[in-house]
Length: 155
Ligand code: 6OG
Image 1: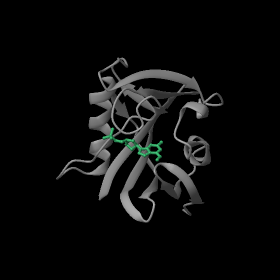
Image 2: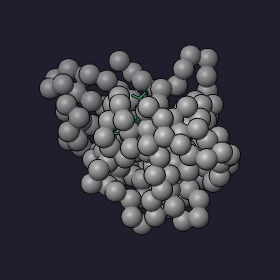
Image 3: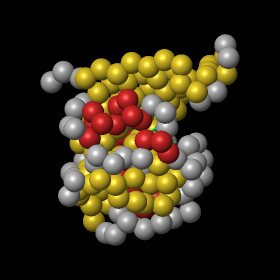
Image 4: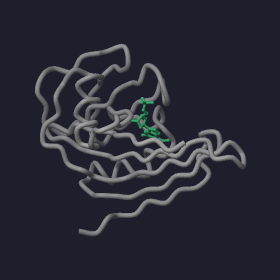
């Protein structure tokens, strides 16, 4: 099963807006806002829609920052492959609010709660927060990371 998904990080005044995810994949972890791209939707519009749905704000100044592949095995069988397009936004309209999916919280850019996030995040999120475009591939077995690679994208 291949899934196309988005992640969006709003960065403003030296802080980044994360959500504590309340349900679905990664529930309990802090993450960017995002989810699955729908049929007939491009990845930019999916990132905007998910942000509105999850925390009630419309992001502005979207930048495409990278592609991450998460390959999750269940021993020898491939369980799921996630193609995740990552964006940053420099501003937003509205006020972040909690929904049944997510609780929004601001963190200083140098105080990201990596201990309460997916294991892979500390390997790539700092690069994105410093403005680098990246490609990453992360291999998991039952969602425990077994290998990884991260590359900067040349411009
Ligand atoms: P829904 O199930 O809510 O979409 N996602 C990951 N995010 C991070 N930071 N690390 C991972 O490492 C992830 N795997 C998936 C993509 C799932 C959301 O979770 C993200 C989507 O935004 C394995 O529809």
